[in-house]
Image (cartoon, rainbow, N blue to C red; front, side):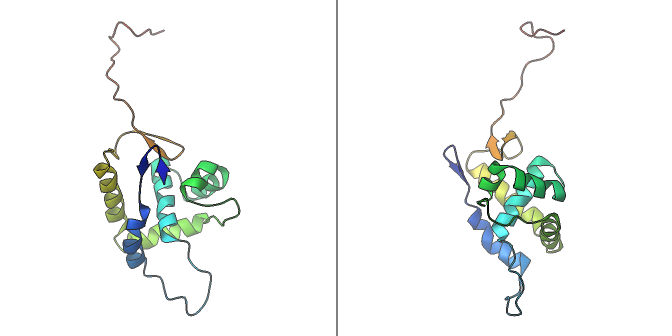
Length: 143
């Protein structure tokens, strides 16, 4: 993802994701799983926007900004709510979900961003200025 001179290399999470998920070798056939890095990005969207699995599926299909963040095209398949739930559940069972988010937070901190503050605008991290005004400030009008 490249936004305003800031680049997050999500690929650094791929080895950990593949190890934690331990997908089969696909020798018995079946539909291949969604890319684990894209699925992790979906969990980020879900966490940052505090939405359910079903609403996450809807928002990805509805918002071009979310599709761009996920590197998906208009004709690409979007994971359904059950797939998102299963992915998160599999990472939770492996005890990896908090470690992966902590690693991502460390990546942001190393780049000079504080992952615990800011506002999300179309999945772009934007620093939010700290509000220092109080109700007693003379420059503020209240009705």
